[in-house]
Amino acid sequence: MNLFCNQTFLITGATGTFGQAFVRKVLTLNPRKVICFSDGENNQVEMQREFKDDRLRFMLGNVRDRKRLEMAMGGVDIVVHAAALKHVDKCEYDPHEAVETNINGTINVVSAAINTGVYKVLLISTDKAVNPANIYGACKLVGDFYGTLASKYSSLTKIATIRFGNFFRSRGAFVDYVLDLKRKRKPVPITDSRMTRFFISVESAVDRALDAITDMEGGEIYFPKMRSFRITQLADKLYPGCEMEFVGIRKGEKIHEELFTEEQAARVFDKGKLFVIHPSDAAVPRQTSDMPVFTSADSRWLVRI
Image 1 (cartoon, rainbow, N blue to C red):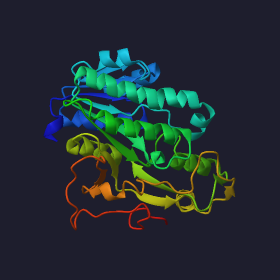
Image 2 (tube, rainbow, N blue to C red):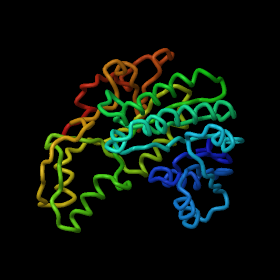
Image 3 (cartoon, one colour):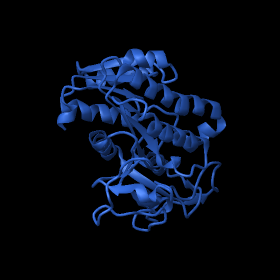
Image 4 (tube, one colour):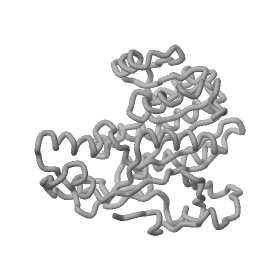
């Protein structure tokens, strides 16, 4: 963790579930300063009151504003880009807004980081970016590719991406939704009995993001080792004996999510608690027994419960 000591961080979307958890963790690693960048005034005030740390700086701004990002990134060493429009149904209804924030906002973050000489940039992405079936996933896929390609623009700024599944206990997430229905003793709407999703705790996601920042050389796409749960089994575990109402798959949903494509499989390497997809033109290490090659149908990885 010596990499993070006395460093200045900037986190976009810092007042969100992942952002706050990341800030909380980074403050234990002796940073020089942590800049919380978001467009939610009330959320910033609440976070400032809760954290009460002199190393925190709160900057109002939107990732759609490149000039504001460049102002915020002056003297920053490490950027974590977590700001995004994340709800599939909202992005399907307002695709223009999804593109403006999730594609153009990512371009702005990367460009501002390169222009101001930031050392490392980690883009927070999603499993929905793999073979996307909705505008949210498609936008994040563009961001993943852009980060991989933009890492070639600068010899100083290293850019990489990390893909997560669903967070346990994030705002609006399935787990809290089911627990709320349990308190109200209401049935649980289920789209399809076959549906599975990858899950990870927010705390583990933060640790894996720090691992990726430590390891990255530029152009990589990382994803942590996560479990895949069948939604019906998870609902029954959270709300034993609950009544389930099968409502059908919503627009833009897939039965199963994935974490890499068939084309990427030969470039997936085991890094311990992470897997990494090396860029297609990178000089990747020779495969050995402890760095297995995967296929996108590999049952050891794409677990279906």
